[in-house]
Length: 499
Image 1: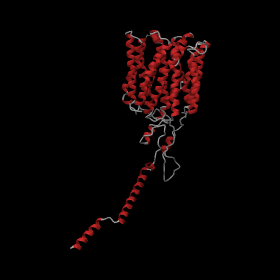
Image 2 (image 1 turned 90 degrees about the horizontal axis):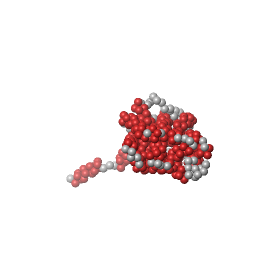
Image 3 (image 1 turned 90 degrees about the vertical axis):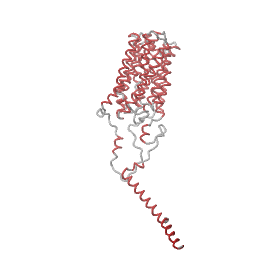
Image 4 (image 1 turned 180 degrees about the vertical axis):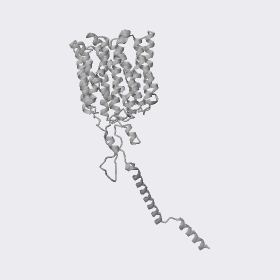
C-alpha cells in the first residue's frame, strides 16, 4: 500500500510540475509571438509608432504631452519677442508723447485744436498707405519693414522738432506724416504675435495681451513725459517744451535701431521640415504627400471661407476700429476738454491721461495671465462692457454738470481699461478661426481697422468741445451699440481656443 501511495503521489507531482526545458520552450514561443505582433503593428500603422518627437525649445512650453500640443504652445526666441513687444511699447510712446502739447504747439504756429487733432491722427492714415507698398515687398519677413520703420521714426521726429525753429506750421504735419511711415510696425507686431510659423494657437492671445500692456504704457508714459517736458520748458528756439519730445524720441530710435540689428532673429520663409526621425524599409524618389504640403505656401483663397466666418471677420474688424476710435478720441479730447472745463495746462492734462493708463496696467497684466483660461469672446464682452459703462457715466455727468477730477477720471479709467482689454483679442480670435494662410490678410484687415479708428477718433476728439460734449459721447455710444448687436448675433460663432 505504501508503495502504491508513493507511486501515485509521485505521478501527480510530476504531472503538476513544470519541467525547465519545457518552460524555456514556452517562453521562447511567447517572445516569438510578441515579435510577430510588433511586426504586424509596424506593417499596419507605419514606423510612426516608434517616432520620438523632439522636446520643445527652451523658449517654448516644455511640459506638454503630445507633439500637437507642443505645436500649439510654441514661441519664438525671447530676444526677438523683446524687440517686438518692447519695440511696440516704444512705438506707442512715440505716438502719444506729443498728445499733451500738440494743441499748444499748433496754436503757437497759428493752427487750431482741430489741426492738432489731425497731427495726432494723421500718422495712422499715412501708415495705412505705406503698408500697401511695404507688404508687397516684405517677402513674409519682418527685418526689412522694421528697419524702414526705425528710419522713418528718426526722420519724422527730427522734422517735428524743427517746426518751431522754422516757424512753419505744416512742418509739424510733415514730420508726423513721415513718422506715420514708421507706424507700419503696429501691423507687423500684431502679425508676428499671431504668425503660425513661430507662435502656437494657444499663445496668440497671451502675446496680444503683452502688446496691449505696451500700448497702455505708451498712452500713459507718452502724455506724462510730454507734459513734463512742456512744464520744464528749456526755453530756446531749438530744444523747448514742445520740440523736446521730437528730439528725445529721435535719439531713442537711433539706439533701438542698433539693438534690433544685434539681437533680432527673423522668421523662416517656410515652415521647417518635420523633425520626426523616420525609418523606412524602402526609399522612394517621391517625397511623402504631407511633406510636400508643408514645404508649399498656399495662398489664401475666398472659396474656403464660410458665411459664418465672414461674419466673424467683419465683427472683429469693426471692434478693432471701435477700440481705437474710443481710445483715440478720448486721448485727443482730454487736453482740449480739461483746458475748457477744468483749466488744465498741457502738463496737467498729460498727467491725467497717464494716470488713467497707469491705473489700467495692473488689470491688463492680469489679463495676460488669465487669457490662457478665458475665451476671447468673453474678454471682448468684458472690455466693451466696462468701456460702455464709462461712456454712460460721462454722459450723466455732462447732463448734470458735475464734471470734476474724480468723476472724469472714473470715466477715463473705465474707457481706457475696457477698450484696451477688448483690443487684445480681435486679431488673435481671427487667427484661431481662419486657416494659417490667412494670417497676413487678416493682420492687414485688423490694422486698417485700427488706423480707421485712430484717425476718426483723433479728429472727433479734437472737435468734441466745438460740436458739444453730449453729442460727442452720443456718437461714441452709437458706435459701441452697433458693435454690440453684431456681437450678440455672432456669439456662437466667436468661440475659439483659449490662450
